[in-house]
Length: 623
Image 1 (cartoon, rainbow, N blue to C red):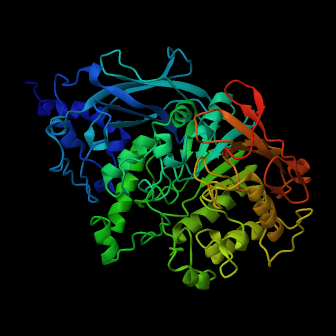
Image 2 (image 1 turned 90 degrees about the vertical axis):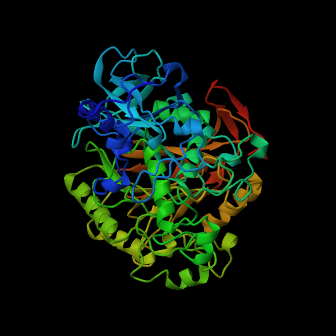
Image 3 (image 1 turned 90 degrees about the horizontal axis):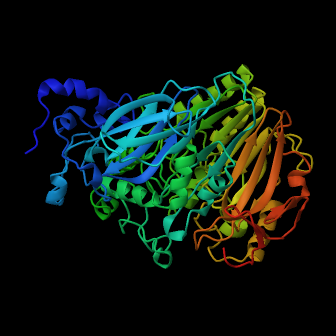
């Protein structure tokens, strides 16, 4: 029988355990939300109980949250593909194994040892940093380490291996960001994503930049997973993509299982392996239409508490956050907020990327479907906030500090459409706005506009997801500042809002291209600042950011019914430094889908296969 480590060795082994960030709390100042490393160390054996051959790197590798001198590296190494059924409570007490867990899992408490290394060469011979870390069922056998001592704006390659064996993970590629206040020697390119829903089809959009090798970093604006059971929002039967577990998720095991399933999509695996990610959550990482005290399905009422298996709002959020922290290549937050994910990245003096949380952190009540009229009535109330006062003040201060430093651009990653949008064609004349977006928090938006206008903050670009459609607008404080939609005069910035990876169009999954474009034409006509809109395509967009200009390229995926590398170049836009508006003529006057104010739709539907490099004509109706 294998013998556990004696106590005198526990201290020496501790460093390897603390090297796995996932044992810690998602919040630096809430250690009780982490896992007791001392208890995990006590289950370590002098002779490892695991045969390296039975251990598998089940979900590839990933990297994220790059700094100028470090980056987060991630993998999962486990004897089983299933996820751990730990019952870690909100308080962090490790009641690790519930009565439902089988004997095999009860006997599988021993930690797994992994080595890791990172190199500037693809052959991994010149080592920049390396280390050893342990993982265990307590953190779902995930490993997350910080590689340090790296050079700024440099490409690196990394790999994990089971200690003392030839069992290795795939080789991942990552990249640090430019040094603070340093120069970027070339334009920096980002791929922007949101809203990947497993039952609605394959995540082809994630793989296309990999096949093209067209970007440096990935920015994900949320809805990385969806919490629904099969049939509540999408049927996965036709594609062999029924969500697991097949129930609406609430427990820690549920969230772990759902993320793990999403991470089997080969294009998502490839994107994580090839690019460092900077992600933030939206609402569905927890539940639909979340706010600080609930969601559309769970509002701390007795009825909803019983319906959801006795899981409270706070406990459900912490289950979701714990699983997200374990599975995503992100850092711990640096303040005493156990749900904080808002943070910033300084890409030299080229741009600052500010990642907001307009969903989970501290937002006032939102549209929960049964209270739309009420939220409509209070949408202008001064006290309403999407972000809460602490995040708001941080956001405004970051914008001002960035401008004072002389950083060329400010890029704001948030979840929901910022610009005012009259959508009455789709929503009805009674409540023409989407009150789950910034339109439901008018005072918060006005405070943001006041900060931009009053402090003369130039070159600000908002990014958004969530809506499952594409929107490109000048940023305008309507009714407060004069604005000319033909020239863009009066604008204070630009908004690029992208469609979904796979989630369906807001006007219907099976809408035709012609009907969708007719709806886009109505929307562009009904909103002065809206310059381009597309309802039809799933996909993503890329940003190329240079000192003189920022360019946005939108791509549509013709179909998510099969895994493929097809895409259509839908539209291209330019923002010149100092203009604070979309450069005219917008989109060079031509787009391939949707509707363009003052321009035309070419409608060629010429599709590019990013894998083979071939082109062919896509026929309407297969999206």
